[in-house]
Amino acid sequence: MSLTSAYQHKLAEKLTILNDRGQGVLIRMYNIKKTCSDAKSKPPFLLEKSMESCLKYINKKFPNIDVRNSTQHLGPVHREKDEITSLLNNYYQSFVDVMEFRDHVYELLNTIDACQCHFDITLNFDFTRNYLDLIVTYTSVILLLSRIEDRRALIGLYSSAHEMRYGHSDPSFPRLAQMVLEYDHPLKKLTEEFGPHTKAVSGALLSLHSLFIRRTQGAEQWRSVQLLSLISSPPAMINPAQSDTVMGFLLCHGCLNSNSQCQKLWKQCLQGSLYITLIREDVLQVHKVTEDLFSSLKGYGKRVADIKESKEHVIANSGQFHSQRRQFLRIAVKELEAVFKDEPGLLGPKALFAFMALSFIRDEVTWLVRHMENVTKTKTPEDYADLSIAELLFLLEEIRALVRRHSNVIQQYHLQYLARFDALVLSDIIQVCPRSYMLESSG
Image (tube, rainbow, N blue to C red; front, side, top):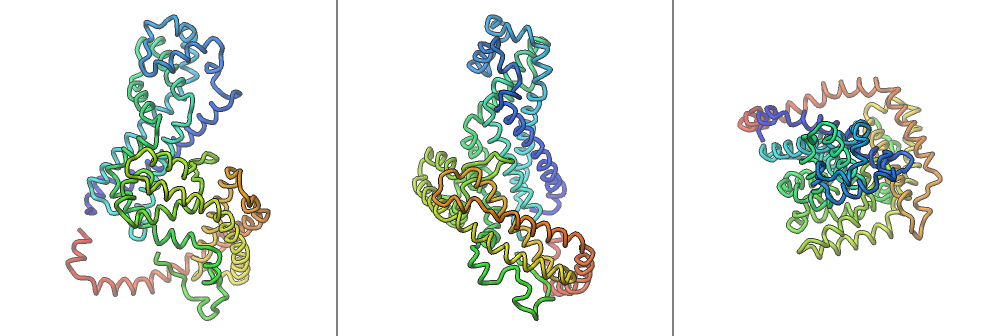
């Protein structure tokens, strides 16, 4: 991909905008699902006795609802058409926003493929992260849409009332209704959509491999390398800390049978969690949905066996695995916090340690929260009920407060570091780079 092509299409800008917009759409789908799942908050038209036959007819005929010749079925809708369109307008427009969001995601993903973009988390971090974030957000929106049981009733009821009130159906209704039908089986449709994007998605995911391995090490491995310890090597205490630093494979599963690296990373991901968060308390039971999908596909018998094996591994080991990580972090971060509080100047060269501590604590807290609410049958319930989690959260807040309080130390140190050490290293790299390479890069 040439820089000119990327700039002309404003790919980075579009990824940022669509990610923000996607989060808004996702929250609205969550709110509609939450509202419609509770009889106390559900739109009254969905509960009224007089509307039962109307809703039954709409659900049966959706999306081919003959408003003009169905007065016997839709009489109550005609009487309350003004109230229905007013009350359900926000619901309907939210579904329309999902459709428009999907259109823009389609367009951007196709443009990215046409530009032959290369994604590597170690080379273009923000670009790769935003690309993967968009895929996750889009998938979450579609999965949440498919979980709204009253989606057909809401859209069909609004469309019928709109046509009775204004004499014509809403222009968005045909495409919106078709989209709703397509996502009755969301994962099957999503995998069809992402088939053409397999190369870009799998490339971006594979670039996460080394980071994923490092982030999923056990407590014993952390302990053996004395992770987060500043006092383990006093002579190196002021040396700057440096780094060389699964939902995607579900969508582009074709590479799992053709690429051993993809297959290896996918299995490692399956062995890490039973649940993936879509939004708030809504989760994806990853092994179940993946097994259901792959069982319906030809040539995926070995992958189904991998899923079952990975699920057994998670159930047997993950609770204890994460419990030990949390125990390690409580000790290691407590020591780290004490050192930083006593010598805040170390936040300059060792700021990376603070961010690593915050990151690891966040990972463990979020893992525990989404599993303790969903894992109901286990032989070791104590692994999912951590009575000391408050201490870990306290240490997180203490580290974060120290970073904020001494942000000027970190800023000043790294400004000098960039101007001296980094500038000298960059100068050496530029001198040894072939002239042709530099010209190509600048173009």
